[in-house]
Image (cartoon, each protein chain N blue to C red):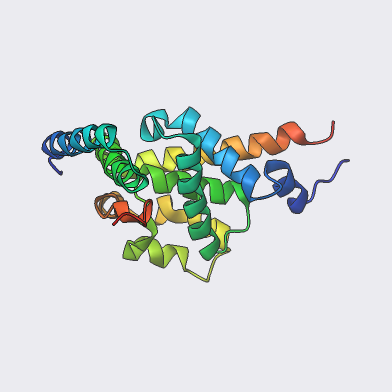
Length: 77
Length: 130
């Protein structure tokens, strides 16, 4: 099991520093970098919940169900 | 009895890529809000479009499979399909392409999913960062 707490704390610092820099000198490049580092933070937070097999299965099934529900709603009555 | 062809079902789900991007955005916002919070729709749509391109390389035929595939990219890692055992299942020609994706949870164990999650590559979502 990875030590997510430590990784998340480190990544929070990276994101905060980048966000502060972006506030002072915004640029498209910095925005992309901030998005990338923020995504890593969210990934780590998500992963810290554990059980990736179960989580991914549930997510995939929800997506499939929502997509098929949309088709059912649009079928001619 | 009303008979609805598979092609019609696919059109009911999404008529084009833009529709599908909107649907996947809606799914992510409602089902996994923490994973995509603070992203503007424009940023999130860009990420979803990258996912669609990857899904097309797998030749998935059904919109529901593409939607599920992209949401798993967010949940686990945008490069989860590069994990060797997952890749092997997705390329197994003994089964229909869309079926292979939903077989992953019967054919791939927890350890493999952990490896896929740990191989997360941030560059996949934002490839243009210098």
